Length: 492
Image (cartoon, rainbow, N blue to C red; front, side, top):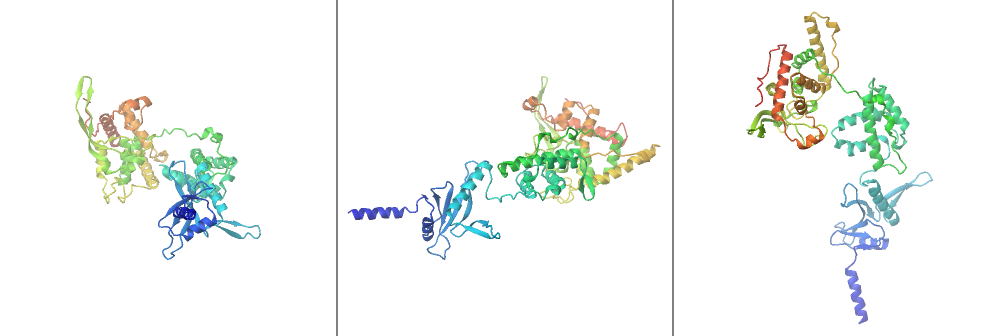
């Protein structure tokens, strides 16, 4: 009877093998390899938290041999509660690690049957994930500055809207100086020296010397983010960022731009734009809508609506029913940054005529208004801007000659695309557009309290303001003080 009871107990133990948790010894893992399971099963180590094996049926041709794959589970701070798995290697002959001995530097391979090393590696994986938020499935950085920058751009920078500008700063000003150095060898003095060279225009690029104080400020901002990112994710325990608060000099603070185009320059600009049908149209629309230039360049025809509904409201004691404003452009996007808001832009008749005159090229899934291919928005602005400036200067000289002045003394003060927005805002003031309405036209946010409680869209008021702007631009570029675009009517 005792023998029968003992036999029954042994049978129950055999049926329950393998358990969900067991000591990972060579004896137990070899036994797993000799027993082919019906399906994949996960078995956990009793000694090392997070260490497990994936017990699988293995190749079809081998009847009595299973595969035992050592894995480690870990968690990342940005994905709480979601288990992440990484493969350590296949027991017993999988490659676990390598080392070189002191005699001739011969490389030796550590195999996965070394279970003490397996547990140590699992512990290191979990520690990295917990303390430094490092995903061990990604290749570890070597510390070479260029590889750190590449990883930073891939993991962090490409998620931002200014990634092209950031990549250009690294490739132009930073990598040529530090590309072959180890990131943790870069000290405060190295950063100060680099910023000084940029500030004084002593960075050489294709035979030219480049660099300005404003570029030094932008470079410092990018370096600060890079070193903070590296310190949080990859740095050794004793590493400290070389960036200090006092590195930005007082003279580096860029002065607010005050450049806007005069009436003579506007006449020359308008005439010069006629030689560049598409690019010239972008310039004109940017001036007439007071919107940011890069948004104008990405304008889509599908964003232009024939009508926009104005909700009914009270004016005094009179109820004004719902009305419609014709022809508006809605450039709003869900991913727009909070400090660069956009809003619905009512288009004046003059602006709509300019847009309608732009040829539709390869209109399909992409419907960019200003495009050479139809699939991408217009690019290579700098080259077209240089040609435009050359034409503007030629026209200004011709105007001076016709006025009896010396054309050789005429100069075109450098200007940028973003100065068109400032010019438009200045013209609105001349056209007697109310200050708050003009700010709404530019998409500027209101004060904190008002922006929370005042949700009126001011579309009708902006329509009148843009009509006034178009009328003033027409008078200026035509030289006729009586010229107008639309007949302005008083508000109801």
